Length: 306
Image 1: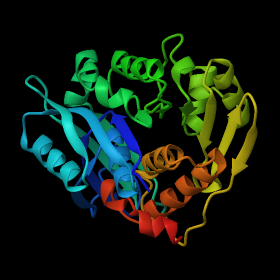
Image 2 (image 1 turned 180 degrees about the horizontal axis):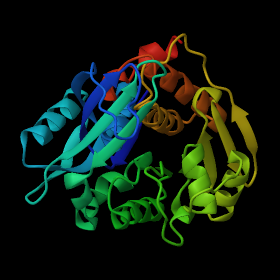
Image 3 (image 1 turned 180 degrees about the vertical axis):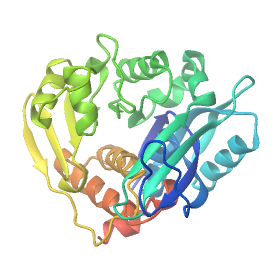
């Protein structure tokens, strides 16, 4: 089978991962943690996930002129990713994320210093317009300037290329942006915020949020529900694909990115949406049983035999 052409436009970070028996309370110093540095960033995670699962992946991003950026670039190349459009910023350091992981539950809290990711410009995206126009599917997130997200989606739409938007971290979106999105992939919190607002105390069921996001223009909304799988809502259909049980959750850091990368591969290969989500669920379930972001991402053979 010909490998599907996937372009991922987005962020790359170095994750500084602290693992402890529990997460600290406000104002508390908690000794006894372990520490590791690992490759991460939502865009890079999604690119690596797609590459390991069979995609012919091109990555569009920006790094700093520092050893963290060089290391991230070498890691991407080692997974066979085309990095021609990874630009180097002369003004900002490479992105960094502080990741706190609760070893008891596998849940995490993350703080991101966007660095050079915030310098990924419209011109950087336009430099990759040929690759975007010739892709089978395009993926982007919100760890980069919104105008660059909009430019990515505009190029894809004009070229008839379906686009996946993982709206994380969630933020208010420009009018009309969702109309360019074929597949919107938020988690429950992101769906609720995008649909009903960002003020404190916003509530709403995932299905109601997905309905609202479809009304706002998204062709299909896929709300990820963690271990419960994913809910799909479009103008023509609605269904839920159950998740996959795992014996023990170790780290959920890149589960959503793994899901998005896997979804892109399956859709680009021509799978029906329900089957593509089942494939993505299986990949994400494997990722949460391992520590780290990119180190946790599975290979195709693991998912196919699952």
